[in-house]
Image (cartoon, rainbow, N blue to C red; front, side, top):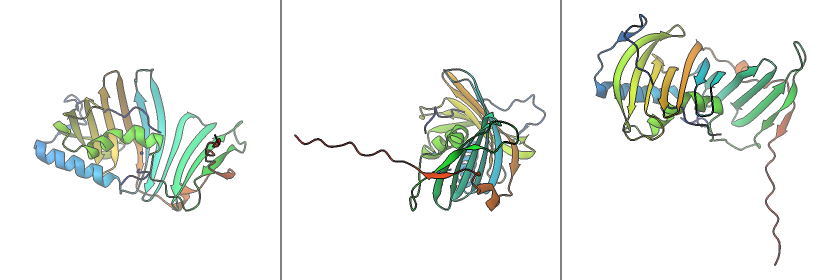
Length: 244
């Protein structure tokens, strides 16, 4: 399900790297290519419906330089939240979708213990947001979105199992057949279809997303707004018409 669709567009995450045979945490699994293909697509499908809170680190070398980011994604369909922890403890950005409303919250802190300054922008009442997906989710889940949209556009060159964030993960090494937005990639999902690891590339770019903490316990508190004033999104006024 696209929670907004759990979709802003950045360069899509083109996700490589085969599970190394030298890694003691990796176990080869003898799945046929057809079985592995079906299993991966089912994990991608189910990942849109799971209830989970996951912290990720995202690193990459896009054409314009290195990046290292930290994100927390919380999903309890149809509610969703992402927190960008990239900049510092004194600069916080959250996107919260709850009760069919979309909130963009930005807070600045002057120092430890100081109340935040900023605001939450909210979509108009009654408006259901269906896109685009928040940035952090797009960084981490882009390859999965591509594969879901083009299920015959890739092949699986190998499978394995490993432990990521303390959870057993099934991993799939991918090669593009007809999808233009990635060359090679790897995705790892938990047994309950939570994305735990992705690593891949296309010319000039590589992104690696790794889950560091995973919890299936999600409550209403996870979707509470920060203590900031709430303002409506201001839509641009239509251009004035000039009579001839």
